[in-house]
Image (cartoon, rainbow, N blue to C red; front, top):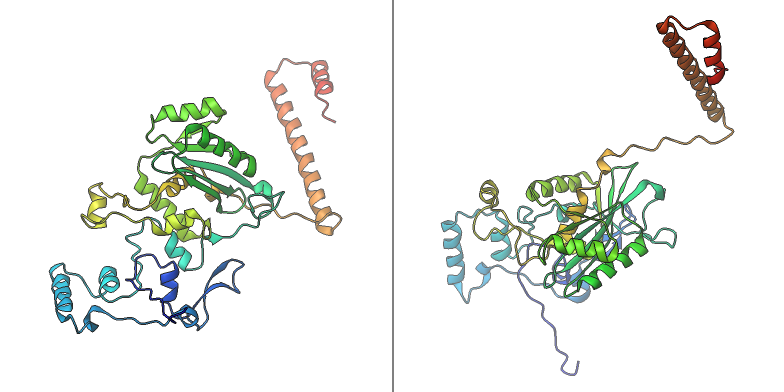
Length: 369
């Protein structure tokens, strides 16, 4: 302040269009503006730049660096040698300074769907509804996913799927490393006390003694944990991505799971995604956090929102429609009773030797009136 100085923030656009640097370089974006078409908080184009408020925005490419003209010449040689096209996201980001998201590098489609204004939500939590789920509450089934570690993060994710609408909603997430088994078990119990008993708890046996770790949690804390199915992980990721594209899955905006889903990338340092997929060597980038993503993928396999059945519309008591429905149900009940009696009479006829008195006795016992 004494010297009336300035602060310079500089860098190269990355693969994930989020964060303060992204906002500072984007004309027409205002932070936390309420979208009239949605009840959620999101970015909205307003004609005013974030840089108008805080920053003076200046951009250039390597070609503009006339003090070092050979840099651009070298970049063109690299581009030609590697057969990189003008539309390649890496070329546009690293050499032209443009924000371009290459969705082929991201493991999950959530970031693309989020940018389109879907697949995220903000729960309205209440004492009687700690998960903040839409009413009616009896439509929701809770599922918990766990990922174990020590140097790596221990992770907990809770989600709820609906029995009457094709929705799966992320409810809660937690991650922390350097936790003992007692500390992590206590955290799981505390989470259940806050949000409710899940129908299923599924966990990755991972390292730390594998199955022994699951058994210890079960014996010490009385937790029933199903071992996570990890085969065909890539196929299940693609199925989950299909749910994202269909708008069936909702992630809490700005949560840790939100950030992991937006940032988890494939490791394409050795080859293309297509070739790595064909050879079965496609792996996630080890430098990206994925513990919450894995826990969410584990629980997603036990969610059945795609089998949901719409709730039958209720009819207000005392209305004309209510009396008609009551009459229909009464007629249906009488019809069922009549069909049942006819079936029983046919059964007696099939015996042939039963007398009338026996039939009367059976009729009295079963009371067909």
